[in-house]
Length: 242
Image (cartoon, rainbow, N blue to C red; front, side, top):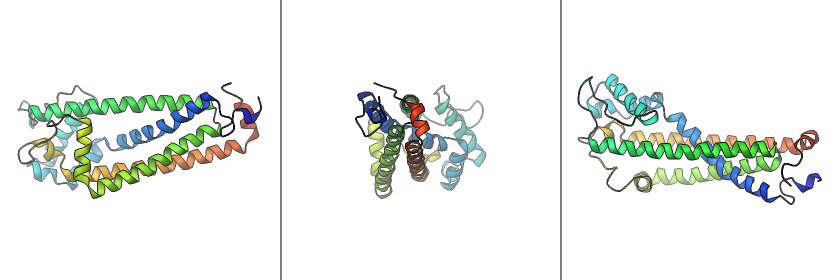
């Protein structure tokens, strides 16, 4: 089979079309997961809790804020999802039953989205291996990056202009009604993670996603062009599907 029989854009096979769709869809999932992981750590959380004056809101010392937040993050990421962290050893949990139940729901959502991202990463790597670096694969990855970049700009503008409504809509999509509303005067969960924390973290994640999406698009475009201008690589790649 000649080169035109299997390269992207000239009589692509059904397998290539499916793999291309997979690459376009999987790329945003992987990029978003990487961006979220960058901020799901105690360093960022402590930094933005300081900016949000969480110590003042909770009445805790900065050391206590760091301690209880670290325990909550540990339960969230590693489990078990008890979220029964006390302020002092042997003391009562600082989160009530309602708050702990919501955090368990949050963990379930994170695990579900993480599983989707993992599957997307496996499919993306599989498509890349099968494509053997061919241009159509990198064009698909670049397209996924461009779609994500445009999407994050649109969503970012919506969050910037209508943060409260957007944040509420996000919760309505992922959590049952009535499980995510708390009294900021008495409940520690929203004092530890106030609106300022979430608005600034959302902006930071959006910026990270945008940077990663643009970088992914640029790198994939360059790799696709390199393949197109390298006859030896084209010969080595050969045909991967009839």
